[in-house]
Image (cartoon, rainbow, N blue to C red; front, top):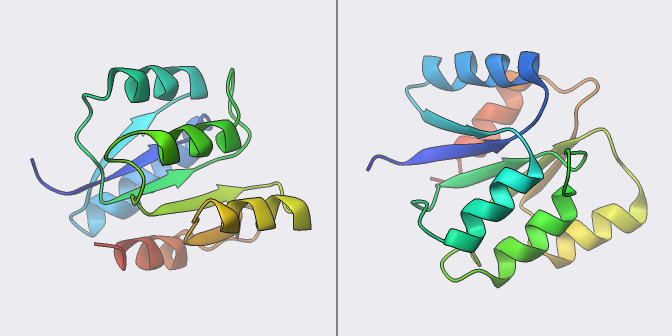
Length: 124
């Protein structure tokens, strides 16, 4: 399978924007809509590992941090680059993300998607 980016995001307009940006760069994108769905995929551990994960922290059912902690404990997912894109920015959260090996932490408001996509592409 070709390299792809995994987007874990529940905001449909933002999903579409990412799809357009990554498609324009020739990068495959797979979308997971909520934390529960991603937890199930991690539990089954059958998903091909992505080149990078773009993770929102505010997700339905399971938080982004809970997902990130589970990823880091799941065989084959320990070193997958994770980029957080969220509206949550507090020092404790940023430190927790750094401790869990997050590569970048972007705040959605004011984020230029082109810049984010370019940085994400640097991980593969």
